[in-house]
Image (tube, rainbow, N blue to C red; front, side):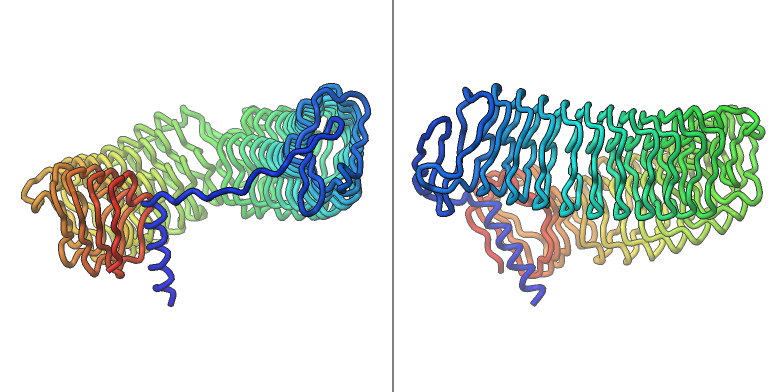
Length: 623
């Protein structure tokens, strides 16, 4: 049943992507009526105000009825740019303040909303710079993005108890906003919510709060103290940047502290990172110049080496030991002139993201058995690094950990590693000897990009994914055997491996990315092409652009790679045989003269835009 549904879905996708749907005949527009400054239409529920004359001025009470019909709605932008309007009172029939309803009503200073309103849509009062007060009824459950953006005269707001999310950019540039009452129902404060609310002094975060988005309280210089609830798990990038917070106790349930989250909060004196934190991102506490004490809990997973840049603690030479900064047995940073041979202290629990990055003199590093992970960028651009002793306790090596370590010739990796992260050995141009541990499941994007020293690679049988450009531009790689466990070979995985002359792709592979073998010796060898087609095993990799006429995919083929037929403008029709299970994205892109294709019911996966710009395709047969 599941397979049948999938086939039907593929067929519908094909039909929709190829044929232009007929235009529907719309009913006639409703009749517009005018009464005073109001233009309105009549619907089944009553009168809907479509526009209000821009000439209205002063105080306006919107009538409960128009033309004998109850006023129940207003269109988006109904009062848009009513520049002389100062006060407005809406009737009880209105239940929703639509998008941009009062946008740029620059003299509007007071609004009375009826008790039945349940939603204030995005940008409803955007740019109402004179709006000093607004009553938000208890019936409101949603206040959408940017609803009060730029209401620079607004001084206080009480959010109703039914609201669960403070939406993006809700009070941006409300520079006179002093007090906000946030109800216990709120679980998330979204990005830019109180951005540059420079007068905000009184804000109590509810005990239910779980996330604070990026830039949420940026430059709220009036905030001097903030109580972060124990439920809080995530603080976004720049969330409290440039605030005058003197104390912020980080809750025990906190998981992530984003980039620049507290940067420039120069009144903070001490920092204590709870044990459960998974990541303290780049420059999280940078330039908190008052900080003289930092504690990192036992169990913190990843800390960026620059997280505390510019703090008094970081700048105090007495806290450094022979060019290295440790905090609570966590190796934070190394100075660029650290000695050539360095041993991380025994008992060290973690090594910070980028800890040794750019240490141009470093040649040899020994890591103790107390360390369980090497985070991203740890040895990035250590151009003279030739040897790293990694203990068996290490289970994780982060992305770009050895990026640009051009002198690294060999490295022994512990068996516990399961993933080669993105760009982990990017342009390690002299890397010749590496054994991929048996437990590795994924070789990430660009993992061995530009590793010119590699001549052969043994991929263990447990690997399931070879990422985009994983071995791209590894110029001396001559042979690769992909094991039967692999199901996906990413875009350009071996692109530019100019000496690669031998490769096998097993039937287990269900997805082959575009340009997977372009600019390789295998690709350029005409002996590997048959009738203008390049197959590797049972996978159709590429058909030459100058192919002309009908095309039948070879029997036994399992996959058609992404862009396999791209720009084959001479192809007129295609037959895909039974047994093919997947067709890659853009597979037939710009086959502009193809009129028909036969696809077997064995196909269970089809990539996006498979028939992009096939302008003459009129027949698709699911055989």
